[in-house]
Length: 343
Length: 99
Image (cartoon, rainbow over all chains, first blue to last red; front, side, top):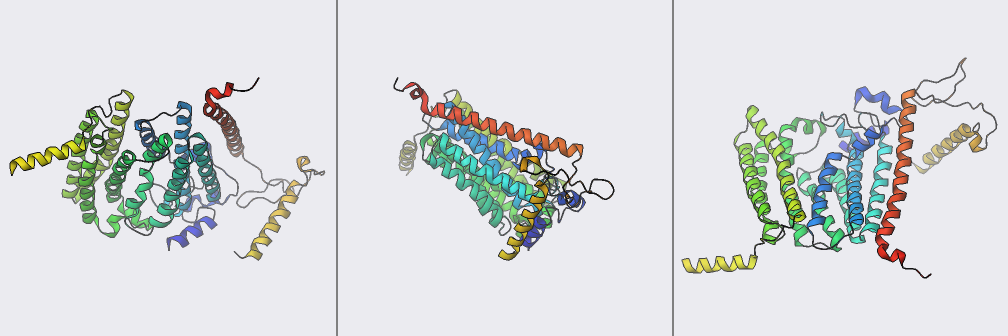
């Protein structure tokens, strides 16, 4: 059903649903400004990708030429922008019926769908080639896979077909630290996977908190978000569940030895705050207090993720990261010794 | 869309392009009086029923100019980027050549 609407939308030059902007979008010449093309790249999402990839790159032991490191991060940023652009091209029809997205360049008729498609494909190809030339082809292939995962697996397939869309699709947003690590070493390790896991587990509480508030918008667009399919209460439970797993996983960088004491402190405090907020979302189910709880969790989740990665970054910039690393085998031995003593 | 329909569309597009370029000296045209069709959704220009083709508004002209400048700047930046990348990749080997 949605695919048919999308096709009609594209055939009509991108304004089949947007009503008022119909005339503008019928024009066959581009009327887009530079700002419209920039907004196709989803700058806010791009900034998160750049930041997490930069942290992945900097916390990985090894040497990268600063110029090539900068170019690699730039390529990852452009790759992320290309994903966003292709997503906007594909989702133009549903963007047009959602209040949050109806002013985006394609539904508003400022940029034609075909322009966005060309722009996105060109940036995707260019970013992969530049990353391959600047670092290595494993990192480039990883970036290409990430773009494919976001644009095809998430946008074209999962988003309109399953309420687990953002859980699985969230992997695309979690890959950048691993790409950053691959830029340095040419492969990925448990450290990169730990950073991936934090973002991966962070995504559901973050987006479902927003979906709880914007569920009518998603319903109007026909997107099967969890609150629309399973109901708000089930969503609240899932948010709490994911946060319960996320909070201890936030400690992984410290336990694996590449996060220091400051990171451990940030992870404990941030994780506890996330749990409190998730509990409040679970408890308050109606009225303005429920809406406020969901908004607070959504807003704080951004601070939480930024805080964790920023602390890692600062620690490594000042040479503090991993100095007070915990020896996992020693912890296990201590635990066994304590258990033996008690018994 | 069938292959036949695609071919027909391509033919029409080529014919239109050829009409458009006829009066353009850059495309080898001689006469400066082409009969252009207005784009859908846009008013036709010209007087006495003679159409001038697409007439861009000042705002559209400005936007097109800005886009062109942005493309030029991007291409220039890419040239510099590849040059700097090459130097960084070669490192000190850039000086290592038989004299």
